[in-house]
Amino acid sequence: MQDRMENEGTREVQEKYAGGDIVIRSPLMQKIENFWYHYKWQSLIALFLVLTLVICSVQLCTREEYDVHVLYAGPNDVRMTASEGLSEYRVLYSSLKLCVEDYDGNGEVLPNFQTLFLPSAEEIEEINRINKEQDTKLEVQTHVVMENADQFDGLMLISDYYLCFLSEANYLSYRSRADGFFVPLAPYVGEADVTYYAGAADAVYLNSTAFGTLPGFEDLDEGTLICLRSVSEVAKRADRKGSTKKFAAAEKTLKNIFAADTSVQG
Image 1 (cartoon, rainbow, N blue to C red):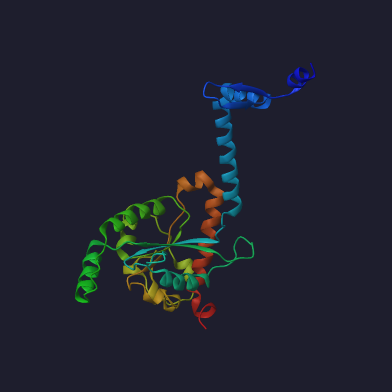
Image 2 (cartoon, rainbow, N blue to C red; image 1 turned 90 degrees about the vertical axis):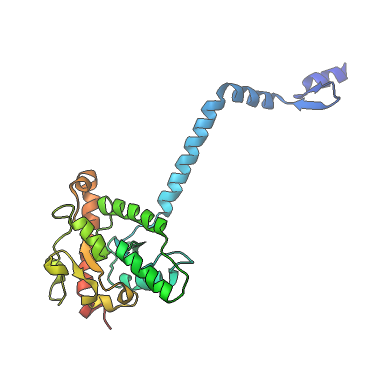
C-alpha cells in the first residue's frame, strides 16, 4: 500500500515503449507541449516582435549622430575600405574635420564623409590609358562605376548630403536638370578670392581655395568643384525641421571652408 501511495504521489509518469526506452513526462512538460500545440504561431510572432524591438533599440542607442554630411563624387578613387584607399580617405577626413564644428553639442566633432569613385566616360579612358602606360595592369571596373552612379543619384535627389565636392561632369549632370538645384555661393565665400566655374554662381573650384591646399584635398582632381545642394520641397514637407537643421550645418561648414585662409591654415 505504501509503495502504491508513493507511486501515485509522484509528479512523474513513466511510459514504456516497445523498444524498451523509458520516457519521463512531467506535468510541466505536458503543459508546455499543450501550450505550444495551441499557440505555436502566436508565440513565434510575439518572439519575432520582441527580437525586432530589441535590435531596433540597440541600433538606436548605438547609432552615431553626425554633425554634417559631406559628399565627394569624382575620378579620384578614395574609398574607405581596408584594401582601397583607406589611408588616403583618413587624410581627407582629417582635413575636412578641421572645418566642422560640434553642431549638435554632444562634445564630439563627427562629420559623415561619403566618397564615390564616379569618373565620366572620358575620365575612365584617361585613367585606363595612364594605367597602361605605367604598366600597373589596373583597369577601371565599370560595374563599380555603375553602382556608384546609382548611389549618387539617390544621394543627390533625397539625402542629407548638402555639401558636395563634385567633378565638373557630375556637377553639370545635375545643374542641367533643374533651376536652383544648387545654391549660389556668394553669401558663403565672403572675402575669399575664388574662381567660379565658367561664370556660374553655384560652383567654385576647390583648388582656388586655401582649403584645397590641405592634405588629401590637394590631391583631388583639378576640376573638383565645391557645391551646395538646395533643400528640395519634398524634403521640406517630409522633414522640414530635420532637413533645415542639416542644411544649416552644411552652410556653417561651407563658410569655414571658404574662411580657411585665416582659421585653418597654420
